[in-house]
Length: 326
Ligand SMILES: [Ca+2]
Ligand SMILES: [Ca+2]
Ligand SMILES: [Ca+2]
Image (tube, rainbow, N blue to C red; front, side):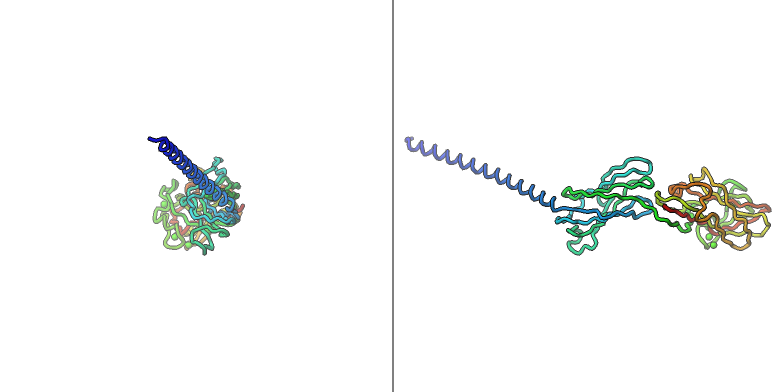
């Protein structure tokens, strides 16, 4: 090998090494640039993303369902809602602190209206309705905080509460019944479920002096932020004949039949159906009630047919109306 050949090989190796190093630097530089550009784009997206919760409302009588009106006031559209987070925190009616992430589709959903541009995509300036359901009702007269987090990590929060507006349940029919002790122990033994509706046949208590019968499962749904201002029980009933000593009592229970109010009595006797309303919009039957005492598990109405002489008692309907106010 001549000296000049050896020199050429050294130079060639040097050039090859220089090229390899240069390529490696270039690749690293490209990667850095790409990473930096992606980061800058994400930051720009972030800065361009703004959501504002305009309002929240409760949409059910059970204080579990709410809606938040949220405007996309930034420049970024949101298409993948599964990457959004909706979180709530509040104190529930058992005094437990709840802080939880709600699951997309099962616990919350989103809809845009109007949604003319890109259906099912939340475009800038579109207002979305986020409907969410919380796992338990907030403590009476309190609310909670809902946080909406976009896929870019932008957060807005708002207060939600379950507010009571004055009203009444209208007369609700029972959907369950059972004979109670008293008299000969069989209550309205014939067709007791006929008292679930106005008309459509009647329940009968034959030779039924002093029998008792429970009606319940009225299906009330009263917000737990409401106070109870009155209770009415309607009786549509009559007798087989007048004796001057027959009447019908109603008592109410708030704990599934363990405890009862004092009785109210209809002393009107008739041999054709007559309607009496016991209680009133401002009569709470001698106690202070909570909304939860009207659930099917708790609320009961008990009828007693008072009399002598072996009267037959006929009952068409026994609905109950509850009045409530904030
Ligand atoms: Ca009977
Ligand atoms: Ca009737
Ligand atoms: Ca009936």
